[in-house]
Image 1 (tube, rainbow, N blue to C red):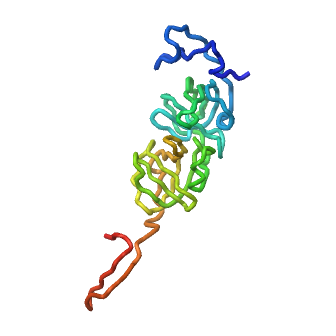
Image 2: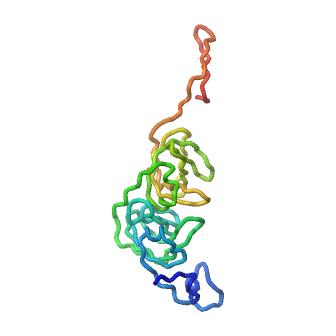
Image 3: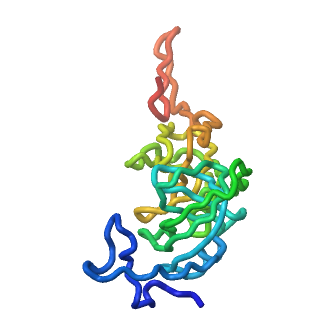
Length: 239
């Protein structure tokens, strides 16, 4: 049977020493048994507060978090909180507790085992920009293209739109300075924080400028001033 932490009154999280959690002065008790699930099961069923075991291939590595996948497509990726050193392509077995961190499902790992390394990463799922912004693809390796419709959303974020609706690009892995109205090809994993889904590119290679100004200036009017000069007014400032 599944043992949920919030249902086991004989267990307190005092086995974790840094930071100390649980009831001060209370005796440590046995960590609840972990139950094995696929990533899809963890993402589509409610396992919040449970100790789980799952496995997958590392698709992105950040400072204190990384993502793993055990398949391609919706609900097949998840975020892992851990200070363990892992590398893209590592096949891992993860044991830890499932929680919702400001709306993002994440496993805080108590054990990370590298089963093998150098594995081929799951193929990035190609989506429209608006389709990225759904819970289905949280933690999943994705790819999309669009025109930069806002080059500075603040806090290192910007956005692109392919006509279906904007998606945010964040700077957890790499900071990019995009150009307004230019087209971009973006690959990364889907994150969720501060009320928004966003793509987290891993390196500069995940963001490719594919075309120049998608909305170049147009001539509004042109008036001859002399026989050799013309006064031209454009729809936007030009250099």
